[in-house]
Length: 354
Image (cartoon, rainbow, N blue to C red; front, side, top):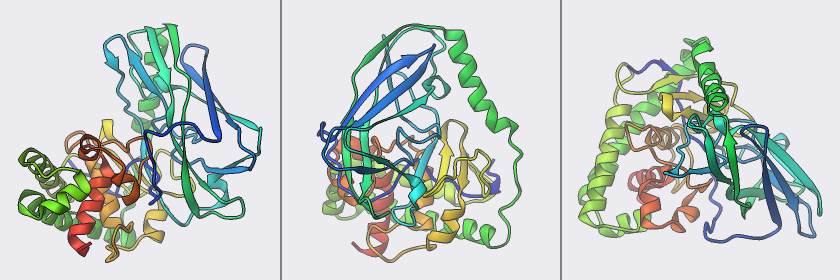
């Protein structure tokens, strides 16, 4: 059942910066260690000669429970089931950034047991990798990204019961929250309009994926095989169905910050494991309902981006903070097929005629 109280948009920090996910190194040195049962402490050192002004929101420096840790058990990767954010490419303020002087080390600590199921206990391997976006010291305009990859560590004696309690406590926050019936007035209108536009974009994108130009599929998804076309068309069909009603569907939508994750620059967030989505104030103040500009952010494509994160739709990821057209171009075919921004950008391109 879809409860219309707002619109969610996933995880993540959207910018059109280019990220080479195969590149590692640069002026960031990241070391991690386990503190206590499952807490991870990351020490981030600026090894360069210039100060770095990095974006905290959506990164390992964020206090929100976003995806920060890659965890592996003997049976393979341990799935992430925490928050996914979408962050504005503009409208950022100084408090969204962390300034790291040359030679300075800053630290961040979080508990991955909140958003990874470590209840089995025992031994796990952990690391962090991805990229931090940055701005010039005297600016809040995103300029580029700096990739990083930490050391791999092994935690041999995780207390499964304690880890399970941490995870239960995190997810119980959602159940304790008072659901606000606040998608009214202009917020209610914007939310309904975004859902309607999302449906129309997804329907057109589904048709284009099924039988449209092969070059457009190859541009965004790196493939135009019948299998790729079928997968993408079916995902867009599910998006169109989800966005097509405000009284039925799989997600719950809210217009109030019920989790307290609407920090500086966050447009919206979602908890895919609970199909729980929230529009932040910036979603309503900074985005137009539907843009005619190629690869722009707007309410409709932000909604569409977030809907793809739902497990019932596709369960997409953000590929370690990869956002925007330039970054999508750096991904492989298999990565694009499960990348939220690729679907949003493709839908925008079909609508605008990019």
